Structures are given as C-alpha cells and as structure tokens.
Length: 265
Ligand SMILES: [Ca+2]
Image (cartoon, rainbow, N blue to C red; front, side):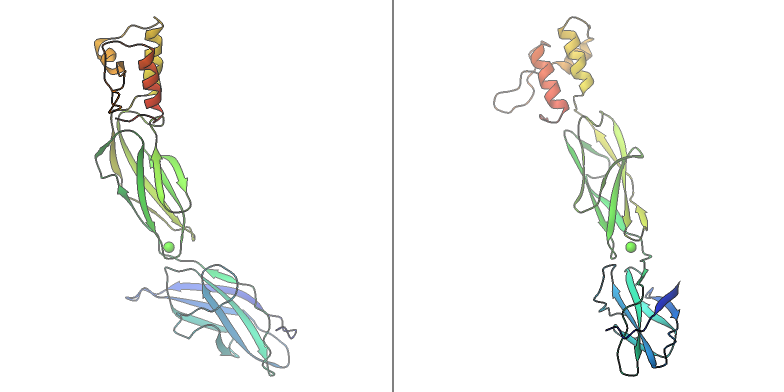
C-alpha cells in the first residue's frame, strides 16, 4: 500500500568475508524518509533477478522482509556468494501502512562457473560429425558457453545442453586443441582445460574438387592421391567405401556427400 511515503535506496556497499563458509555480508543504506508519522523501515530481499515477490530467506537477520525499525542502514550477513540477490526497502508509518518498494538493487554472485569438456576424451580420434559436450554449472545461472577450436571462437550456446558440433566441412584432417569458456549471468567466467582432438578419415571439399578436375582431365594424380580419392562405389550392404581402381564421377559424388557429413566411415 502507498500512503504517500517516498523512499529511495540511495546506495549499496558490498564486502566479502573470508570465513570458512564463504558467506557474504551486504551493507545497505538508504535515503531517510522525513514524514512526521514515520515509524520504521523494512528490507525486502530475494534470490534471483526477477521482480516481486521478495520472499527471500538465508540472511542471518531473518527472512524477508526484515524490520530494521528506525535504522537507516543495515548489514545482511550469511548470504550465499554463489547466488544473485535483489534487495529493496520500504518505509512504514505509525498506522502500520507500508510504502511501495524503493528502487531494486541487485547483488551479483561472485563465484565463477565450473566448466569441463565431458566428451570426447582427451587425445581421442574422431571421424564424421563430432559432438563436443560441455558441462557448465553455476548456482546463479549460466549465461552462455563459448566453444573454441585452436583458440578461435567456433560457436556460442546460451541454454543447455551445451553440445557443440564440428562438421566435416568446418575442419580438416589434423589435430585440434579445443576448450570452452562459461559465463554466469553476473559475468564471472571460467575456461575449461584444453583437450586434443585428432580428426582423421574426413573427405574435404578440396578432395571433391581435385577428383572432379581429374575426371575432367584437368589434373594428374600421384598414386597416393589416387588411392585417397578412389572411394566409390559404396558396398551395397554396409554402405562403406569399396574402391574399384578407378576415380570417376561416382567418386566425386561420394566424396562430396562425405565432405558434408552425409556419409561417415
Ligand atoms: Ca556464479
């Protein structure tokens, strides 16, 4: 209810205690109300960034709202540093009528996410489409996870599952270093350990172009290249490569299909 009381939360100060439980204390003070029938103030708080209701628990001073009587500053203790909190103040008069909430201030979490690559295994070998699965956990909430291939940003996901796909068209037959970086909604970030990913057995668009140029009489091939490009036909049953000693348009088509991930072996 609004009885005409006006109240502003003027400023807020934070400090982190280094106690064993890593609890956090938050000092708050506000612009005093000057109305004649002022009786006191209440502090409302909650976990998270959303709007009312402010039905928070966890502060040693009690559940929300905390009646601080005529004080114009208070320190909330024992808050979880891994969580985000929203706080606001109200004033109430001698009739017990309470003002609207002041401006809301947000206390952001200070604990960075925990992030790791859960598959594939480090130094594993992969062919075809490869999915790199990342675990990212944060009590205050994950904002996004970035995935880097050889230190270049490859993709960003904002919601779980954090599964990143590497397609044959995007990588070559070589060894890559990959890692992920997770950000929580407060902006704290953590980089995972690197893993090494060995890519083998891919056909590339370059291979398709090379085989087409050979078929058109525009290219000569070394024996090694010829062997590499002779992939067709496919076995009727297993759909695996069954080379026939020729490189022709069938090989071009199979290499193309393999280079975009339609065929894997
Ligand atoms: Ca966090």
